[in-house]
Every structure is written in C-alpha cells, then in structure tokens.
Length: 253
Image (cartoon, rainbow, N blue to C red):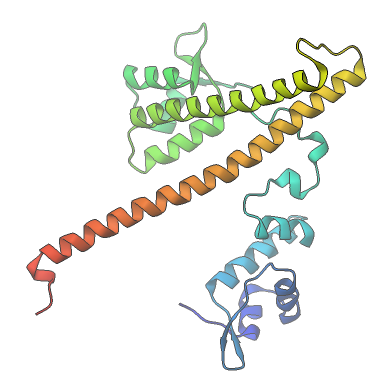
C-alpha cells in the first residue's frame, strides 16, 4: 500500500496542503493514519481527492460534494436541493425503439428463446414491425449487457430481472395502498378532490410517500445486498479453507 505524507499527497493529487486539511474538517477525507506525530495518507485519500477535484471541475460546490461523499446513498437531486421537482416521474417516460440487431450488438448473438425471455421479463416489448422492439428502459439493457459481458447467461438474467421486478411491484403496491388508506382516513372513504387545493394536497401526499418509499427501498436494498454479499463471501472462504484443510499438499508438516 502506497503511503504519503501531506506534502506528497498534495503534489500527486494536484491540490494544496491547506485544501487537504480543509477537506478533512468538512468530513470529505477520512482521518490519516498516525505514525508518532506524522500523518500518513493512503491511496484511499488520493482517490477521494481526485474525485473532489473532478467534481469541483464540473461545477459542484463543496456542499454538494459533502453530500455525495458522506452519504453514498444520497440522490443528486437531494444534494442539489431539487426536492420540489422530485414528485415527477423518475422512471424513463420514453421507450426508444431497438432492433434485434442492436440487441445482438449488446448481448451477442441472440436466439428466439432469449428474445422471448427478454419480452417475458418486460425488458423489451413488441411493436407492429418484425424485429423491432421498444426498450422499457435503456439503462436496464445496459446493466444486463454488462453482466453478459462478465459471462452470465442472458436467459438467467432475464429470469432474475422478472422475479426481481415482481418483488419491486409488490413493494410499490404496499406503499401506494398505505397512501390511499391515509387519504381515506383523513378525508373519508371514496373522497374525491373538489378543487385545485384538494388536488395539490393529494399529489403532495402521494409524492411524499413515493419519495420516502424510494429512499427507504434504496437503503433497505443496500443493507440486504451487503448482508447477502458478506454471506456469499463467507461461504466461499469457508469452502476454500475446508479444501485446503483436506489437501495434504497444503498442510503444514
């Protein structure tokens, strides 16, 4: 692991020692290691500094950067204080067309069963033209393509996506049902807005439920994935340890 004193870190990162100390005070950099009275910085500090420089060069303020770097789950909209427009749809509202040839460029050669799996999973939908589809969200296609390039089977990924989105839809139904029940509790069953103020109130409540639900879902999913990853890593490590224990060639004399 490469180590730096503060002067060296400032030089290789393209900033100043004063900036480094200021970033530490703002919580943008972890505390350095201590070796006696000498502060020792690592590659992690260098990566953070380079990220800060890049964000500053893109026009973000230190306040924005503090939100990004001290709260990894924060949305850009929150950091930029754009909550007033966050009640708008966040999912893609356009569904660009994509041909079978373009799908093959992303995923490699496709057979009919794999196309059918993508259709069944809702990744693409059919159009009235043969070999032309609509992408529900290009980001989903891009994410799946990255996993295919890692060697995963497209049919398996399509099945995982279908089951995963099914669970997400169930969670969304729970949240929106809770919002509907809250409207009934406050206004009475079957209530309908009578004027613009009533509409604004209902939209604000539903939008707030959506925003809170989205943030809580991100946080819960992050925790669940961390737990699942730790479990998988532990299982792999245990398997390796057992194999080494059973292999005389790796045993000590």
